[in-house]
Image (cartoon, rainbow, N blue to C red):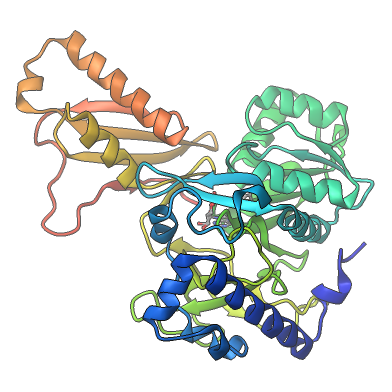
Amino acid sequence: MLYWNQSRECMPREEMQKLQNERLIKTVKRVYHNVPYYRARMQEKGIEPGDIKGIEDLPKLPFTYKQDLRDNYPFGTFAVPLSEIVRIHASSGTTGKKTVVGYTRSDIERWSEVMARTLVSAGATKESVIQVAYGYGLFTGGLGAHYGAEKLGASVIPISGGNTRLQVEIMKDFGTTILACTPSYALYMAEEIEEAGIKLSELKLKAGVFGAEPCSDAMRNEIERKLGILAIDIYGLSEVIGPGVASECPCKCGLHIQEDHFIPEIIDPETEEVLPPGSQGELVFTTITKEGLPLIRYRTRDVSSLEYSPCACGRTLVRMSKVTGRTDDMLIIRGVNVFPSQIESVLLEMGDTAPHYLIIVDRVSNLDVMEVWVEMTSTMFSDEVKRIEDIEKNIRKRIEDTLGLSVQVKLVEPKSIERSQGKAKRVIDKRKI
Ligand code: DLL
């Protein structure tokens, strides 16, 4: 099987644009009438749904930011009553509150469809045994891949993340053919396989769909070599739907965006101007089929570019280049999105220490590790060791509860963290991705 939905994935451009026009017009009407937030933003810009006749009118519409979703926390930007929502997921916000996303029953159906396309582009079929080692829960990775795999009719192993020894044992015993997890976890598993003395010939693994964090070509090559598989980069974000927004095909020359559901634009993050195809800039998405949480011109903060030329795989869907960075300071640590401001909020709320901190991220044995250095106040510095240790422990617990990630906390001497004259340097990222 080459495609899951050939008529859509290989649709001639003019037909795709016609479909996008129709769907965009409907979406704009829907948000204007159902979401007070969008109505207000469009009124501010002096536009009405009738002004949007097709995708050429996209630049007339206002942008949506992560902050807008937070301001309307939790359900304020949903376009349907809660009784129509069958699933709620969430991802990290920049500070305390999460970004909440809701799906109607038919949103889940569409999400499964785009994830089935993604899995098929990695070579999955109904004969495949798919080990879903993305986290299940508020994170969209696990259930997104799960529903796509079930729609395809494959056999799904919903193992979720962690417990690597068991992952490897199951991979061997159940004959997993497709692995779904973050690329760094795939490398970690490769190591575990080696340590467990399992030979690649004892496994049936053929391919992996790896995403949720950046993966360079060098890292991909290493995964492919160590696991003896085809490694496909898959991209998505909770706000837009979760995984399933875009995925590579075996040609590995960009990620095909599921354009019949999501319209991409590349903008200059400073001037907010739309840039021509091929230019690098910030990726912006408008969803055109979602019911629960339709998004108009959502600022992803991911840096990429768009390529419209035909792909050797036969798909006509536009390709986005691998995400190379972000226009904000979000870090992705073991697949979890972390904003330095979340850590700052915890420290300020606790108020035990000075407001100076430094986050140090590294990759040790293919696993991301994060250490937070926090400066003691001068009074604290003269305190007894036991009290300092207690504070350290409390800070660690609060940060771990907030991020859902384990961290190391180190209290350091007053004035030992370098002060900045301009923008404070809060993060040292030593990972070579
Ligand atoms: O990471 C959804 C996902 C799950 C995608 C599983 C792929 C596989 P969020 O937690 O909302 O959703 O994080 C979204 O992660 O804006 C990017 O910065 C980053 N990201 C996701 N996929 C990739 C990728 C999921 N393939 C944020 N390459 C996005 C680089 C990625 N960064």
